Image (cartoon, rainbow, N blue to C red):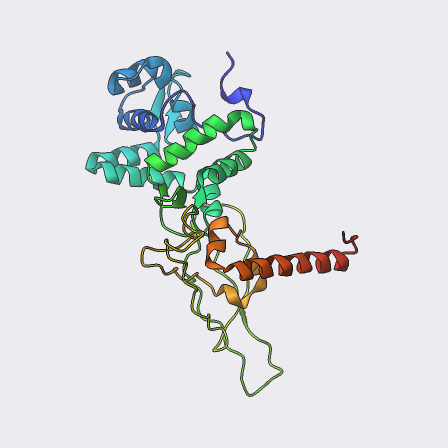
Length: 310
């Protein structure tokens, strides 16, 4: 019998079924985790009140994420060690159970993809869905499954809406505070002494993540003081009524400081994408000047790389 997993390419990641709402799938997963006997579609339907046909589509994803394990029959499942831990958390409260689910899923491929994509602030839904498809090595034919997976992460509280059509990581921006000790500062009396560079702490410092992450050095010492962050324009300013507020803007109108000072590193300034909402901080003259500067940088870089300049 052909399974849903065998229909995928060898390098594609499994995503939840698109034939059941995300909140209903969480209910089915919870019922499967709290069970002390092997369960299948019929038992899960009886426990949740949903149709057996749809309930039978959910355990494959829970099995793939480590919450369930196969029982004596291919279509029967038992909770794994992680699944039993989630069941104990749900016995305490709904919030504790969802937190347990987040702790299991945050280290998986889709959790890492969401942390990486939201590292520089809130992202649109389409942006997160595209990231899930890319991380799953899937084609656009599975976009509905990617939407359901994103809904699943919203239901468990791993991805949270910010109220302006953007979505964020539940712990806030993914660049965490540096935990490394301060790097030694160059001796001011010795002008030839090298300036110490302190690497950023890894973006994904959890034990459940795999693979190295890139780091960006930054200058330390008294000269590495960041200037005050510019405040966004007020909502009533002309030209901003139809545009959402800039990313990372708080209710007080101030922006939280990053884990490192971006003004110390040109690469760190250029890496985060600039959204249309960010341009609302600039005047019309500044936007025109920015366009000219970017065009000049493009032409000079193309010349340095030996490419023809149009």
